[in-house]
Length: 266
Image 1: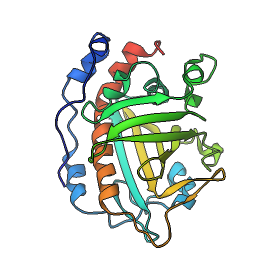
Image 2: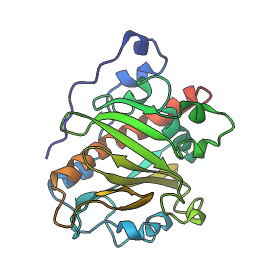
Image 3: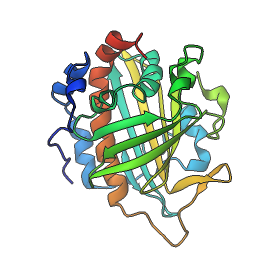
Image 4: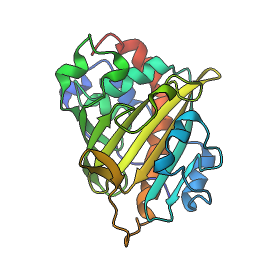
């Protein structure tokens, strides 16, 4: 599989006048070649099972896939990625996830100018409230996202959760292998559970992503919603993996400067 790298999404005259338009104009960051090579074959290792997701937070999942994608024995899909972000801090990432969901659509577009159209929080007043701790500004907030992960623009609803509401052991947040995180359930073409965690590493952070495709919310609980007789087509996790390695390579490149310029501007 080849990564789709092409024309950038459209921008308005108002967006062109914003100070962070310069990040939209610059070339996309290069994706590490070793990750591009992984696109051709699913991972031989499975992802940590969703039911054992606390192992992911604690860093006790070395025997599972760290970078790659595939389909698990129960038919659900998985995507794993690890990105070293030099010069990025935990505070920057805590800020980034709520910041890009309010204000101009350009905030989401600069993350991946070729595939991102908009991300809009349904509780902008909560997100922008200075009394809400920055690392809690996604909790209980839905992001309505339009993006293209290979099959054309698709609308997605991301239901962000607090760590405990996602089923994590809250005591693991702030530990050596999980300084902070964001978690959500995606409702769209294919339901999925998602977590991005990060922790200090060398001159930046290690940013780790996990997607469990085929999971959704039923009666307030996150469970497998994929019927037992169905298997996720391999093209689904492959496409999501391709998108993930692209967007987070670019975010790693732009975030220190975006944060320095805009950290006081919600």
